[in-house]
Length: 589
Image 1 (cartoon, rainbow, N blue to C red):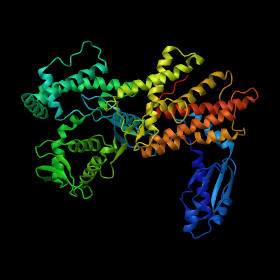
Image 2 (image 1 turned 45 degrees about the vertical axis):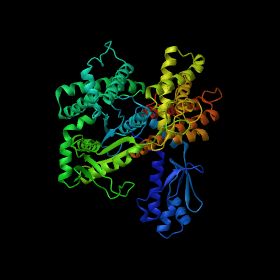
Image 3 (image 1 turned 90 degrees about the vertical axis):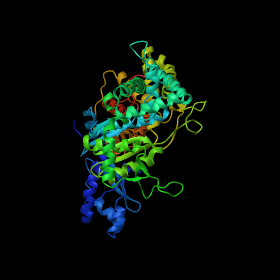
Image 4 (image 1 turned 120 degrees about the horizontal axis):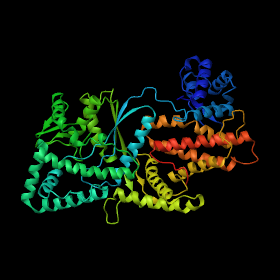
């Protein structure tokens, strides 16, 4: 693996040394380089430096230009406006840089992070014995993408799926199953996720009806909660049946989402039971939490209710039961002290922001999040229907995730089938591609929107071949593979001696930004910026196709080879970028 210094970073280094030669006090200053439509790059940093040094910015810019050596990297540099620098680089530098990226098949020259650490990422958190709905989609999709991106930069990532597998509702379910022991029996050895969910749903509804109608059953169910919390072996064994049945269902949904969730990464609320009493004791001893009306509470100056009174974080209720806060704080202790995490990332609905703000502040006061370990809520917005209201069925119920994915795959399969005859796809390929396109469409629609914003779920738009959709990117990749297949004897080879057309230069400069984009996305947990980069890459490719014929008989052999090289590197970059978002790129579409 050989990491490649980006062209923009090389230009930055040249400008920084020219700056410090022209103005010694500017050592280490940032030239503020960015892509420009006036030249390849524009540097805007001189204005602020000149102001600080009480110098004329245009004169200082002229002095800097005089210090810049043009040649292998920089072709031309000129002063523009009040003191901007416009920089054009050589065609040779672009092709040589891309050639080095092309030679590194695995990483495309993207360097590993300077000081990688350990991140625990908490995402995809369904509830036991409950149907997964569209709200679970965002946590799973965003969390999986951020995990892939962090790992690609060299971070050590521990996945945690904090499933809802504890609480008073289990008293009712356990008691019912104990009295009707065959309700979760299976007809066959192989159980589908659909069957498992249908068993759980039927049992839940029956238990609920009995609980609401029969006072004696209600009393027995409440006693079961006490037995469960006390760790009674028989009660725990019945509880485990619910967890196991739910996992059959969870794994089937994650499989539909083309997402790997491992059993050892599922550590639900129950996983922290043994720590709850100690967490409360530590908080009380440190004076972080205090007793108020019998409950153990943490108070905050800036958190008040509508009546102006402080709203506390309740760690332990007055009846001795533990709230979510006790579990979340115990999980922080486990992740920081046992898993040795530097960063904790929670991919959780924005509506829970206040809860997590209070939990993180409590952990900070207790010394568990102490600067060496930090916590961040990657909050996400709501999924809306086409009408801009929260996404519901016609009957006003929450949309089941399975139904949604099935419909996306059906729509996508129809889109794939339309073009299948032209390229001779088999029925098996149509179905497989339909699945990749449908699931990819759903993931990309989610990931191409900034996580914290709400987004509209519009399947017609998602599986469209036009616009900012994953199908557009998948077709761009498939088209590249088609060109490479048609190339016959011609092979992709970099030719640094050739002059580049404007569309080739634009594509090349954008390809060079892949590594920097990935690191920027990893640092801020913002996968939508990678989606935007990939869409721009596919758009540059479209312009390139229109303006530069790749396999034209009129081209010299070295021009064909160089264009095949550009096309192939674009394909590899699309493939790698999409994989980081959890989206497949079929070879033929």
